[in-house]
Image 1 (cartoon, helix red, strand yellow):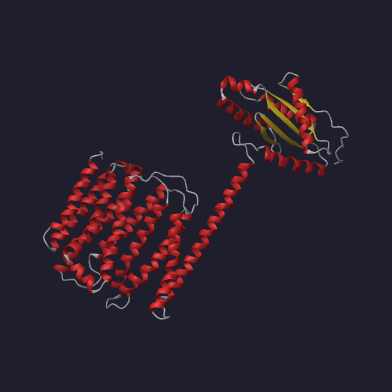
Image 2 (cartoon, helix red, strand yellow):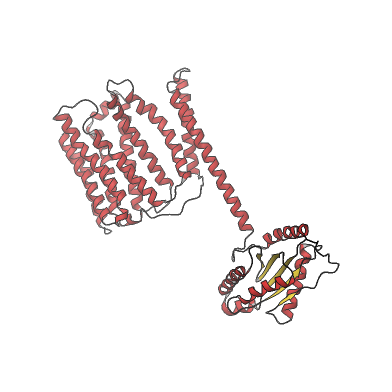
Amino acid sequence: MSGRGWKIYAAIAAVAIAGYQLIPASGWWESGWQMAVGYLGVAGILIGAHRLPRRDRLPWWCFAFGIGANVTGIPVSIYALDVLGWQGLPTPADPFFLLLYPACGAGLAVLIRRREPRTNWTALVDIATITTGIGLLAYVFVIKPVTVGQDIDMLGRGVQAAYPIGDLLLLALISRLLRGGGHRGAPFWWITGSLSAFLVGDLAWVVVGDLGRTGAHLESIQWVHRSIDMVFLVAFVLFGIGALHAGAKNVMAAVAPQPARLGRVQLVLLTAASLIAPGLLAVQLHQGHGRVTDGTAIVICCTALFLLVVIRMAQLVREIERQSAQVAELARRDELTGLPNRRAWNDELPRALESARRAGRPVSVAVLDLDLFKQYNDAHGHPAGDRLLKEAAAAWHGELRKADLLARYGGEEFVVLLPETGDDAAREIIERALRVTPGSQTFSAGIAVWDHSETSDQLIERADEALYAAKNAGRNRIMASAAAPHAVPPLPR
């Protein structure tokens, strides 16, 4: 919809919601007004969803179905009470009201899955921790009071308990949506605002119901109960505003998985949720003079929270280990070419020499230096020089054996470790690399065969001397170093 379209819709909805306080004091007037605003929200969702690609419509259809069913329950409730005189629980309207939770839950689940194709286990653990803590409060103060000690059958108790359980489901999914990544434009906040309004409205009625006579008195005041009703009316139309907004097409854009960070807000929420069970235990011990009325529920909650905290700690430890390994790998790898760097070379060469010494096998090293690289950089620019280094590294690597090691030693200089390779074989391998050097460029190279007694630094020094001999001889050639004085022949194999 155009930039003005959703604003006009929002203005009409705002006027309709505000007018709810001014209608006559009649149950049919109130239910009719609620239906009109509710179906206005459904119409907004369906119109907005129709403009989206077909694969992006499913969450909006779920939201429309849930709100439509909830709104339909309003006249059913009035008819059952005023016409049929239905007083017991459950009422014919309860199935309609309860459909809101699974329908909106399904829409949120699809939305989360589309935004994050890969399962975010850290987010799931965080949300499970928060929901478990709040779930204990819901059980003690809402679910248990409506299912224990009332003169209603098991079905009626189950229906009454289904409402707070549905709220917990929505709370968990809203928290999971907020915990994840992805585009957070206006429609995202309209969706979360609508669902949050449903939770606020349900909570308001719970608080009023728990106030006893005071709550009954408040409920009899017209503007009070209508104000609570208006919270639900706001929830109905916020979905429609979100669907009609031009940014609705971005709500389900997929994002890369987020790292397992633990920010301050998350830490505060997780800490608060983890302290709910011991806090409730302390309150009951104090008020009951040592008697605990909900011990089983508290024990179950504490156990679940403990396990969730352990799982979260394990996730953080694994993430730290992964990042440490990644940092260690980056410290040993050249950023430009992706080859091992000088640090990695200095670690690998002594190990290769020691292995060759024990096995009595030859090992050679070669030092390669691109010819006239500075002039190439000056003529073509540094980006072109970087491309040459990357392309040359890839081309040379393709000519080496699996056992060989190519590393960037610094600047335009590279080194090659050639295990079990003598002078002639090493020259053949380096000549193959010279032939595939890209960009019509060449390199000079020096080769040194280890004498089984010199240090790795001395071996590199001889190869480097051979390299400079190749440079002085005119470049674009490979020179072998003379054997080191007092060389020790390799052990017989």
